[in-house]
Image (cartoon, one colour):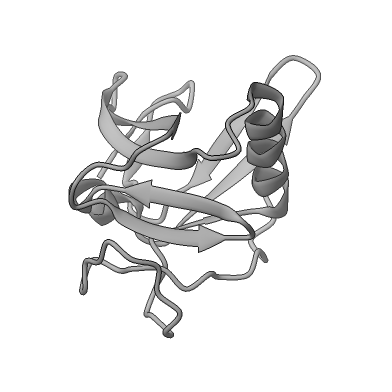
Length: 135
């Protein structure tokens, strides 16, 4: 997988914020590859969700214990960490940010399946099907 996507300034777990940040930070919470940005924008346009934000959260799931929950939502939750990448507003909660910091989200389209793929440096292991992880 391409690991050369540029880092985008984002809130870190050191200084939670509910606002976008333009300062240089240690590691962004989550970056999207060009393919992921393109797919999110296409889905938002096709569904008429141009005024929505991408919520990425870590939830209990799968055989490894944790999974990714992606939703396009109109309103954020109190305390959400928010940042921008290429015109997409991305949000997560403080607990999820601890699992997501440094993660890259890609979109992969194949002959038999398509979907978002996460490269998470915090994942110590993942299940065989790749749908859950543990940290």
